[in-house]
Image 1 (cartoon, rainbow, N blue to C red):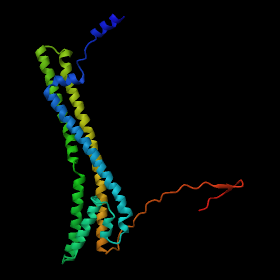
Image 2: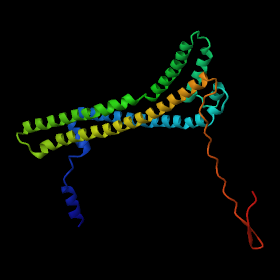
Image 3: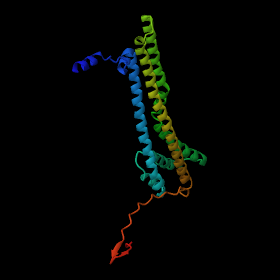
Length: 259
């Protein structure tokens, strides 16, 4: 029985059409294209997670603007209630700086334009930071399928060369190059699709943050121009509910807990 099993194992055909074998068939060109694809994929996921963390942090910090910033009596006092090195703190600090320089303007129209321009520059700088890395995702989504297509073209070319040398289109001559071509196409799509989805998702979240920044900037300008008379109503955080105390029994009669 053991001899039969060993003989069957020895006669089992060796798989020559796996992923590694297909890449070996492509040679240095195929391995180079694969390396480029891996770099693109790793870079795409790195940008996705880092920008997502950055966006979530800004959205979380916005709650402090709603609950504590507008309770302050002045912009300078409100800025101290915001987290340092945050987008909202940058806008508040730039507003305080512009307010300090507001009185140096001799023309009221020029002073208003200066205040508005200062806040707009601050918004643009924040949006530029949020948009960092997104062009890489767009580039990966646009070019990865074509890089995979390059590997496909090279694989098909090798298959045609093998057919010409052998003089026949036998499966053992074309399976390797054609397999390499199909693998390159699949890898290109696997790299491009997540990059495109991540780009569109992050872009939509950035637009939402940009709207909040613009609204906050407009509220600050209204606060300054009205000498503090116009400002949004601060929101209150929902108080934590305490669990009700269980009723106590006295002589078999339940009594309500004392408040």
